[in-house]
Each structure stands twice: as C-alpha cells, then as structure tokens.
Image 1 (cartoon, rainbow, N blue to C red):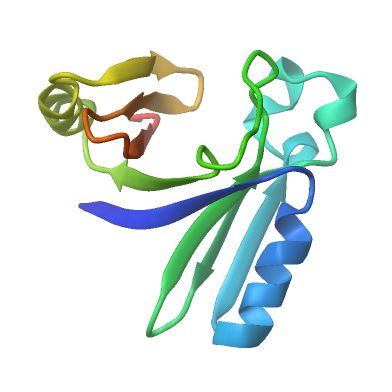
Image 2: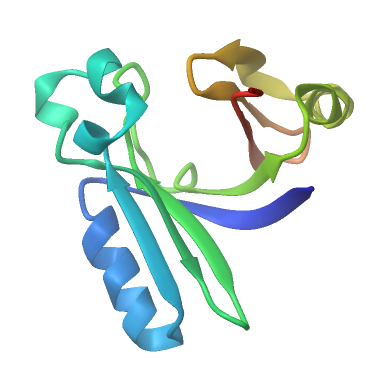
Length: 137
C-alpha cells in the first residue's frame, strides 16, 4: 500500500524539530540517525549524527522528515518541503514516477538502491516529489 505524506528537510535540526512537532500534535515519533541505519557505511563521518528518517504519526497527522544529506546540492528555502510517496512495489512507483516526469526536472532517476528504490523530481508545476520503497525481500 502506498501513502502520501508531507516530507520536511532540515539542516541538522530534524530531531529537535520533530520532537517539537510531537509536543504540538501528539502522536508517536520514530527517528533514526545515519549511524544507526544501513546508510552508515555510505555516508561521511560528519553526517553520522544527522537524522536520516523521522516519522511522526497520530490519529490526525503524519509527517516524515530528515536532515539534508545531499552533499552535491544546496539546501535553500523552497526545496525543503516535498510530497513523499512511499510503499508499494517498484513497478507501482515507476508508473507514477513516469507519469509525473512529463515536463518535470528529474533530479534523481527512480532506481533500485541498497535500501530499496528511490527517486525524486520537480514536476512541471514546481512541486517536489520523492519516491521510496523498501528493498523487496
């Protein structure tokens, strides 16, 4: 099953921001640092304490977030909020990715990675989308 949630990108303050949102909205917060994830061997030492994924869920809301981890792209206002489509199969994500790619700027082609599938694009209306599915076992 796929879900669509807002995804927030922070500059080293993801954990603190998501804790704050938890006090505002309630719910359960899960948060994983780079050093505690499968990405730890793929990331430089200075990023090990950053949050690679956080998710706040309550009956009313769901927010996903991470710290900015793209070393080759600057974090600027306007590219720190996106729509996050997660779950489903690679083929399901690929179908939606391909449809949204019409007239879009594809920043990260959808592909299989060590943790599953990932891709990102800015659609023809300027909306940022991220796609992710877990590795199929």
